[in-house]
Image (cartoon, helix red, strand yellow):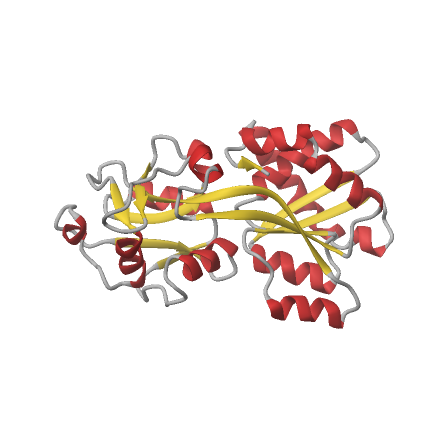
Length: 282
């Protein structure tokens, strides 16, 4: 499956020259852009959908949720993938351009905090995570780990995961100036897997891909609360503290082939793919 998805993503990148094709008049091309967390999920949907609908082409590219919203606003995509909700400023921009950005919650996700497998730390509180990513805590011994400097890895600022984590974990505070910002979930997995003192975060769907390379730690709301590991079940029941929705946004209510594709996403077949990719069905 991974090989197929890589091929689809690569093909979609090549299709970048067709950006905005659907909006420009090619009704058989649906352009999807945005969240890197969702790019493999959307590619899996596209692969299955195109097998069942040979006359419709689906192009999927990443770049981050911010990139998806920008593309939706300037009319160069039909659907924006987003791992964060739309900002009021983006809503207002859409209205100023004569359309409404319609939200479709297509699944659920948990953000897993990951460390190197050699790290003895098994769980952290939300406050400890906040202090690590803000730079207030700089040594693992403060959290029961080795006497070693913490290497912090985050997504870049165009990422919806970056912004969600900043808002819900850092309480809208700033990331550490020493944090290394990376362009994708896969890059964070690789960096943490290669750095014995590394810590980062990835969408739940990337844990399967990262099996053995990194270790997901348990998270508790505070020192007295239960420690919860990120999983489909703990995201579904709301017990995992760092959970969120996965959204797709369209220009007004979808019509034509965009609607056909969105109907597939919400179908039993489409939602089965959500689970197969390690996320939680809506």
